[in-house]
Image (tube, rainbow, N blue to C red; front, top):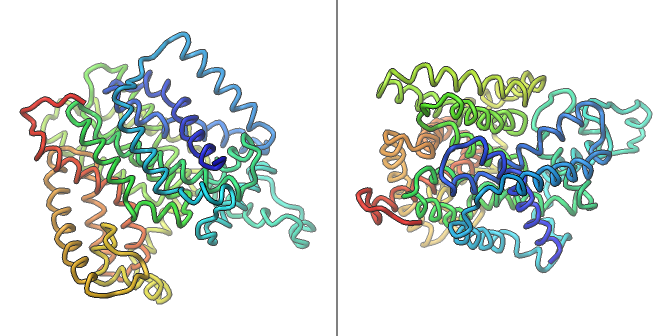
Length: 468
């Protein structure tokens, strides 16, 4: 049970570190503050870890002292400020997260730290990166003799991270987890990624918790994600940056895709918090930036059509976010832009023959049940497959309708889902099977939130006040 305890402890740690920032910077419902706390703590911890490592310090030299300082600061804050915590509202969400933990990580109860899931090349890459950051500074390059003699396999990743300066936040934070737990990279990997899986679910719930009457919708969305086979697929396939990136994307949308507030101070504070999420997204998983930028542009344009009086407010928000992203991402921005351009070229081009074979099911009608978790990759095809395709096709058609309907109602999750569904069509037409495979996982938090919105409006109409 040690691995499960480490997983739960990491999630709680991120929440404890993040709640003070959310409470001070975001004027919103108590429930949304609580759900945003884990991803806020994760992103807030990433910034000093990345900064110190960029200055040349190996993570092992400062990991535990940094944790001690953060915990002392958090304790002082909680003692002096005594921020109220909505424990009563938190209980059903805690139960859902326990369910998600059991659903995702039950093998930990059997194999403890020896559970490696797929044990694929993704895990190998990220553990090597973590070992590199654990023992070396960010820009430290290997002596030629060490490299030629293969004295340290983690040196092979140093060129990727130090030269391109992209996607390093996930292995960097894995190195931090190694330093505070005393575990090896391989032992810490699965507890880390399952903890991020829980952070994604909580951050998705925060998308709907902007109003009191959306509390039950947020709980339903979290429940759907807790049992989502497609979302869990990314975790079990050990796509560590993907879970981190989806959590940051959901948090950025939850904080920034909201109507501007009248008070300038509150608006700047909210934008500053949002910039932490967007900046972390830049250094962690820039591939999903279009799924924030495009919905954000649509949201602002629709807001301006509704009322031109908010132009100055939006200008202030954009300026604060831009400055905040520069602070968080700083010299890593060129590398992120380069990776973004390369990924865009891959996404718009026809998929390779290898990808079309490896992910062939995603270019067939089976993509519909795969999107909803009605089918499994590589599963046997039989009579049930016809039913699954029909059900998945009808559900996907409904998703397009709901995405458009709730986008017009200014729901951030629906706006992101709409952009993803549009790109899904383009990828299918171009034969981009790998892109479709990834997009089915990316869409899960926003798809389930949109479905939860629809269900909530049908069961709990707007005219009726719902007590959460």
